[in-house]
Length: 154
Image 1: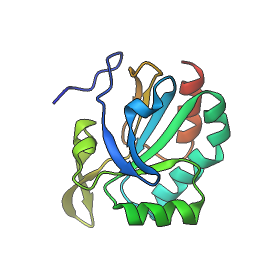
Image 2: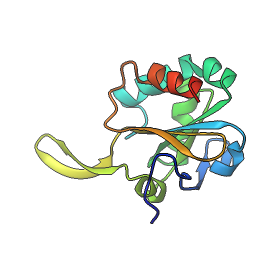
Image 3: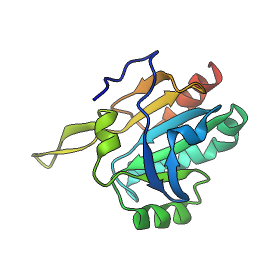
C-alpha cells in the first residue's frame, strides 16, 4: 500500500457515488477536496457537509471539486444528500478500501468501548493529483473555511 506523503501523488481510487462511479481521474485539471466522515445523518457529519455546501460556490470558483466519503451505503448517501441538498457527491466505501488507503480507519472510543472507525479527515489534492494538505482528527467548526483558504493558496 502506498504511503501518503505531502508533495507526492495521491493514491488514486474509484468509488460508487450518488451520481454513479466517481474516480479521482474524473477531476483531472481541478483540485479535489476529499473529506472522510464517520456516518450520514449524525450531528457532526451533517454540520461538516452543510459547511462545505455553504462554501460550494467559492470552492467551484477556485476550481476545486468536493467529495464526501464514508462507509455508508449508496442508499443512505442518496437520502442524506437529498435531505441536506448537498451540491457535491457522496461516495460509498463499504469495504473501507479507500479509507484504509488514506489511513483514516483509527481506533475510537465511545461509552468506554473501543472500536475501529473513520477518523474525520480531509485531503487536498491539486489539479495534477499531488497531495498538498491533510487534516486529521478534524474539528468541524471552521474546518471548511480553513480548507477553502488552502485551496485558494494553491
